[in-house]
Length: 347
Image 1 (tube, one colour):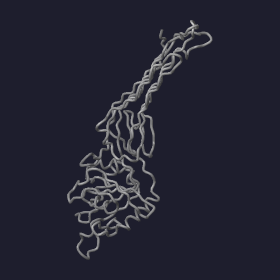
Image 2: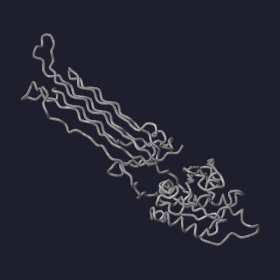
Image 3: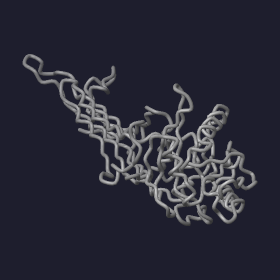
Image 4: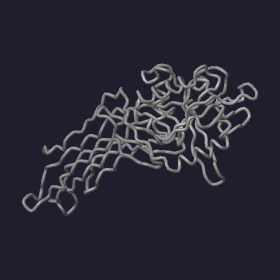
């Protein structure tokens, strides 16, 4: 199951409290202070894992807490630090707090601290000075950071298939790659994005994304608009796929471009290729209709498929990396608590 949004709560561990103690051993009745420091609390880290492709696991576990640091010991022994938590997320996950974007996990192996553990308190041994040889002062450990997070996965793909429902996007993906998306002769067969690897040559490849069908009003949430448009922002090249059996293909293209522009005008500045599909359904001997498309294909007969792959690869060689501007309208209510280091003495 493909899940691309999740809300979770993370809490770093609190720092361990201090200890006030004095050395008591035989023949040393006036042993000095030996209270150790508290251990630091564990932190919460987010890691971009290329092996993950969905946020489905976070539907079952939504709360993550790191360990607290232990209290300082006697004989100048520091408390044990709390264990960190490492939460693995798919590459392409954007992390939001109530203040907006916190991190963009766009690189494989990227590691971000989202909640820092509290520092351990200082034991009385740490306050020994020339003027105070027997301090009874110690400090409390700090509290760790707590946060509510909104995670939003935006697929990392080189080419995004843009088209109306039932335009043949899933069939084209299955022909160009080894992916096996659901294919059926009715609209909205594709309810979640599918990815496939295209190999122009033996030693080169790029990622092709089959995205849910786009309809008029998608930029306002109609149909599967949000699910589609969120993912198309990551693609470097847009492949507009038009059905040659449509009554008005130019109007279809106008709808697609209008919805992309409403969502993010910069999407239309990216390299794009307009392709006419299903030409095998044209009357025998009839030429393809004239229009802004420069390439025609048939997934059923493999007509024009290899040429299309080479054209896309040529565009990718010079296509810039995408920049994302659209932020989610819904941000989490944030909890961020961190107690200041107390300077109160403890006797």
